[in-house]
Length: 198
Image (tube, rainbow, N blue to C red):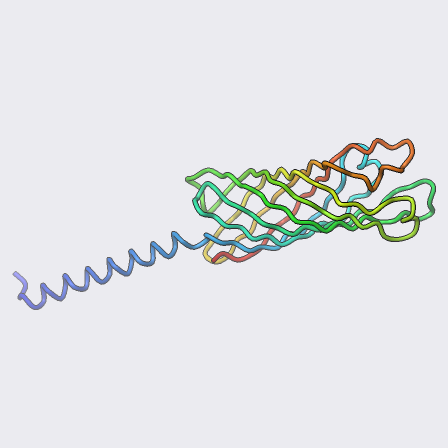
């Protein structure tokens, strides 16, 4: 039988340890509610537009809010640059795209450290035609429906991953005046992501 003072000390120590562990668990559970990450990869147009363009670099920065383990919301800026192959020109111009999108993401509720996901949303981009022969094409604002799939690896304050996004283009007027070219198509990119979790 322990003396009363020692017993009280042991109980107090146990309660303090339990409270500390519980607080730490709550902090870890909340970590990752907000992610900010950079994206870098390659992209190209598909369909008839893909026959006209070259694969080029793609980049972006994204803010992800994760209110639950299975549902996330993203706001992102994206950019890309693709050359144009035009037999009428010795050197074709390039398409520099700058845009933004909002995405709703869904992932399995029981996976957080390794989180696969799919997503869909809405976006808008401005395509600027630059370089020699730019007069053959017109800069344009494009409405998009981005469809994304990927996987994220989350550990402590860090997040990394891989994703691919296909953007259904609701307009592609920059290529409307190109003869004998089917201007239907979308925009496909694949990128790595790296960022921080808060």
